[in-house]
Length: 244
Image 1 (cartoon, one colour):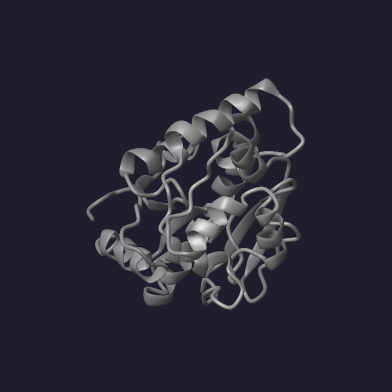
Image 2: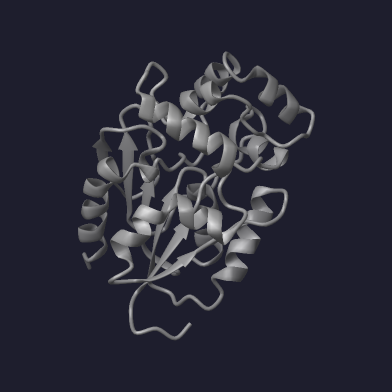
């Protein structure tokens, strides 16, 4: 890749990673924030396992120079860790927004998810893709469960109808099912983690074994698509990216 600007690689999360158009929609605020200073590469995932996701990402990044930067969302943290394991000098710094811990989704989250999305989870346990069926399920995962704001319901409905693509079963099982969860090696570079205080996926998140600078912020798992709440964390990330 020939570019006079530094490269920023974006790794999307689950349910929004199969096409460039969809991944770009999830990262639209991130892209607008950084596009003036960086050459931005948006990764998509192909295949039916986490290892295949990593392989497809590596293929897309084969021309990206070492010493680049990365910003990841949710499940994208695991794919970025897999990439960094194969190419340990690829990233100089990595920023996580609602990024999963190395061990995936906690057992307590798995149990809580069973209380309101038992049918999607059972389908996935027999090998069918994981998808959310109702606005309430979307709201519980991505937004505060007790929120009654009309705007939240509109956003949740839009996600359900247009922005959430079913995720193959095996990657999901390797993220959240006890006994199958995949533990990834730590990032070999400095990491900034942005953890929303009401994030359903990340209660009490910890990142042992990694060189972490943690930023706790207001918001939910959908922080990356909330223009108002994500702006301040993106400012922090932008300043941190410039450190030697």
